[in-house]
Length: 499
Image (tube, rainbow, N blue to C red; front, side, top):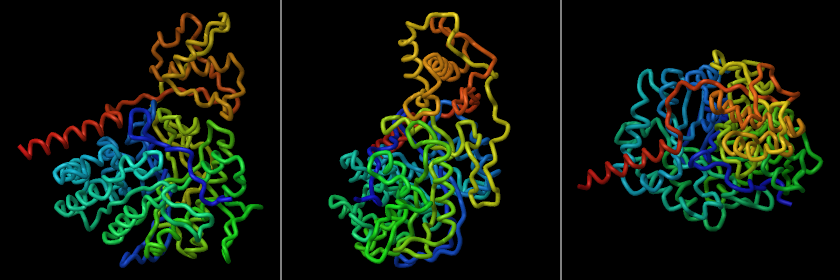
């Protein structure tokens, strides 16, 4: 049984409307010497991924303050959001900024498009008192099997053009290009047999050579939760770091957790290409707190704390003893209630903080604070909720619930969710309130043909939290709008240049 390398059932995020799923970064800060693929590690530290696909967005400045209060010095972004990058200016937080897969075609075909992207999304923010951008993520999991090669041919040409753009901008010595890969890029019955998928051999050879030549790490996303979620035979204790009764024996090496097994499968794949010492960054790893069986606060705390302790111990893995990953980006900083639920309802609940920046559980990031600190000065809507009217017959409520949940987030009501057991009337109230808060508590949005009513008494029950929305004073584009506009601008400049 391939316990160490089971993959996610399908893509976790896409850069399309309400389907983007950006991520939390635990970063292992290291001093690296990258020459001919060699790396030496000195010490570890913690950082985070920051995704913004949410109906209730905190102001970017509030999130930056949250990062600073928790002493988080590294953050990974999934796109170049101008408001986010401006908020990060002068913060001292090191940034990895992402490029959506859908932009790769334009960037691969035009040096001018690459120049424009670097000028607008990097050069405009770096410099004295600016954002400390260290990495550019070229696409996100572009080799994912479910993409059927859609983006594959664009990756290397886009990187080549972007590298030359960084050279022209005098930034190539400081900012490195990377490509976050899904763990389905490689496979093996046991870690030592790890190899890249046969159809990726050529492009992975090109990618790894490019990364090595430019002093960049290999970035991979590893999700033990998805291995457990997608395979009923997967040993639950093997997903965590507390020891297992189902270890994987690989020759002289014994694996007691899925993370190490998956990680060493990649090390073996790189070794077969002659790059066994290439530095590794974990682009995404984490555990959701809701929306599925096994996705809960306790499991998330045990997994994330176990991961942090494991990584910061500097023990490494059997194939890389005493050499932990260069960075580990925990997924995710905040819940993102507008993400696609195609992979599962848990997709909206990966945050170590809820959407409003409140810590879900005690977590020691190893940065000096023994537990997480909540966001400050969060601007909430008034403390009122929309619930089912107890004096009305709810027999005709189905269509209203469908309307509410098609627009708002009702994933906690489903099997395995924290609100699954609150009863039929509670389900109606939760759906009504989710819609009501999304509509910024507009009075008419709690009507539902007279079936809803506003209350000032918090209807939350146990672990089932009825939210109150936050006021978003930012005027940011949605991610989909931003990359579409970006592509149009790049194509226009290319056209104008040729004319």
